[in-house]
Image (cartoon, rainbow over all chains, first blue to last red; front, top):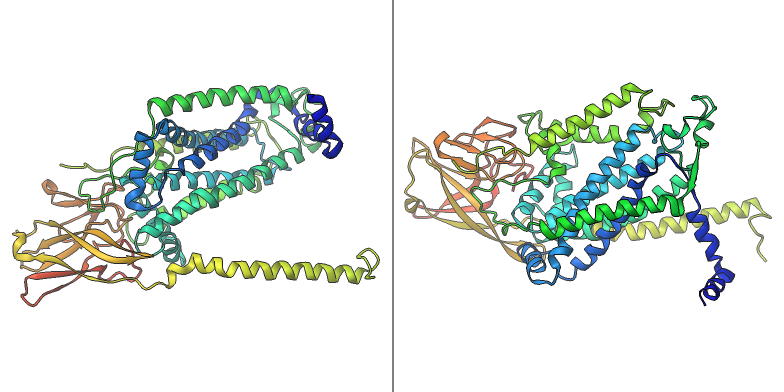
Length: 368
Length: 174
């Protein structure tokens, strides 16, 4: 019976061949667990899309109502707390895993020729996911959302020349209003997910096109000289993607999903109080992934320097990261044989962790 | 029958030009209404209203002791008329003059806390500090506190506030 169905499809579209083509891709075998991060991200994104779609059954993008709709979803809808919790913790996990994925690619030099475009596509995905996180934070409609919208649109307003226009377009007017929420909603639910859905296949296609090259340790026994680009085409050993690599992907996905699920059930998504524009003793807080940026905003006093913290440092930092493969054009891949890049990467990570830790400290006494 | 592109290079060029033109026309035709929808806020006039704040004599102001008074602007926002609640910080100076500040930090717009023990406004987000007359005394804010546009009624006691800041050409921090 099953065989007949398979034959029916094969006669018409050659389905088995397509699946074999896709699953039979050969993967370097030594670093299998390190290569599960990309699949994990694809899995996490799917979870975000699925939970997000069903959150929309209850959500209303209107400022005074949004927070109450979210509250209703969490407290009065059966298992609504789990659905919302998975969406929140899934988002946090996704941003965290992207950072690990990027670090892995950076330290193993996997962004080097011929894989520059993969890094660029990955950076697009990274920036879009961070903006998805920020807009999701705004959509809850609680007190933090209100002030985050105000603060971030004000940060954008310091962009040279067009800053004021950007803020006005984002807010839908001079002030944060019903239109602001509607814009954020459209961006979070339609615009950016579509960008992600478009760029994941591009990212994947480019990997297949250049071949799975893997880390330097895949080439320990290679006899081709390190300066020769051909060296990076023949790893010592390979395994088929299905089931060898897929099996590892599934195990990692299950472990991470279990952690997200436990966090969703036992910690859940905090909703917080209704927004109060009249608040006298409220101290807005950013999510953990924005704290490093938040910390930079505290420095550079005065009219002349404010552009450093709001525009120059974040955009130059991001620009360097974005164009990394064109800045570091050496051929060496092993992290031990390019100490400058490795040390710089570790220092950058330490700086990020340090800024995040001090960025989370309370900045002013809420009340004295 | 028309020649195929393989038979005639000039026909091939012609086809490619037509493909390009059609794409451009459709692209522009779609971009115009989309740009209109996105850029629309830039062409909207802001709804500016006068709103009664209250009587100064009711506030029992003491010199250099700020009072936070809420004001509720009814303004048109997009398709709806909404209430914008905002704080007006009324400060009576030593010579009796009144100042009407916004409680939003001039750095990035967070709500200021009045710390009575230190006689300062403190921003809880990035540590900006202002003294009671609105001047920056610490942290990153680029300018003194915003002052609401205000006027007195005929009795010289009732104050009306406009949802607009004085001396704010770029409409920052509303």
